[in-house]
Image 1 (cartoon, protein in one colour):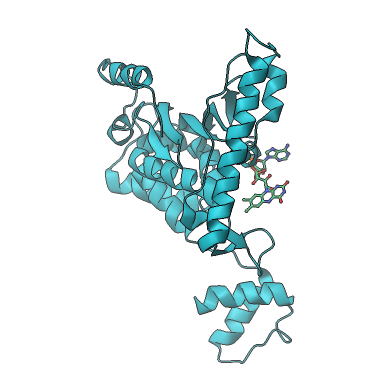
Image 2 (cartoon, helix red, strand yellow; image 1 turned 90 degrees about the horizontal axis):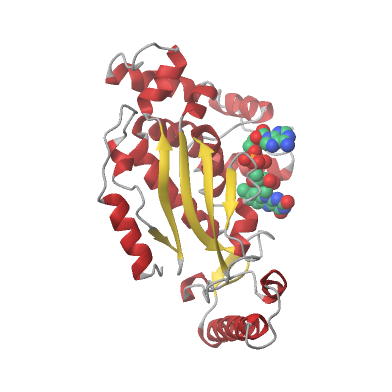
Length: 301
Ligand SMILES: Cc1cc2nc3c(=O)[nH]c(=O)nc-3n(C[C@H](O)[C@H](O)[C@H](O)COP(=O)(O)OP(=O)(O)OC[C@H]3O[C@@H](n4cnc5c(N)ncnc54)[C@H](O)[C@@H]3O)c2cc1C
């Protein structure tokens, strides 16, 4: 991750100016405010602002005049009940605003989550930095043979070296041309046009604001093992931040979303038959071969 000394000084200046407020303060996330947490080779996630805490979820659920807290135990129980029964709106009362620096191909996946508010760095107005995502050697992997949408074994030796060489050389060449095209003492091409020559591993930045309910939805999909590694590492960093911000809600999310499975009516029927001691096969299960495989992977662990 590369923050310039000026950027680092701005962060330190913000962190050095605490203010008094009547608003809710969540100590766990205060410790993260403004700090850039590195992700990938040049990316980061940092918290710019937030609203609410665990108690705010209970306050909204009880439509309370005061803090909404009955007791810590009581609050945790209520939050777990709300999560278990898909009562989503109390979680929407908490919000977080993040500053994220990420490769463009990751941003394309991220932006599909429509329930956030986004403001992206303008490459029409500003010059993009010479920063490209080059994977670490252990993340350079072959196409998966079992999942068309994924990667398999790590490439080794000459193949891996060749891939990394091509990525570095092509990124450098594209950026050199970008610079040449926008040079005000040379060609002077508009930035909005010159940027089209840059590859999808160039970094962009945005401010991303979302409520806790929709953030959990994002994290469930993107912190999952099926998500691409390059977006998953952002989601995992965000999970750590959220766990510090709203520990009860995050624990409930871990237990009732991240670590849970959903079963079809056919799956439940098969499970009940198995528990009664019946032998059930895919042929007698009323499930497709794929659904049966998914079911087996859940019950066999
Ligand atoms: C592993 C993985 C693989 C994927 N592969 C592909 C792919 O190959 N191609 C592809 O195009 N996409 C792909 N996606 C993207 C995926 O289809 C979703 O677009 C993305 O995950 C955003 O999910 P979402 O719409 O639920 O989220 P959000 O946009 O945040 O929406 C949250 C929820 O709000 C509701 N909502 C939001 N907007 C609307 C609306 N306009 N109308 C109705 N309800 C709405 C829905 O209930 C939605 O679930 C993939 C995602 C994952 C995680």
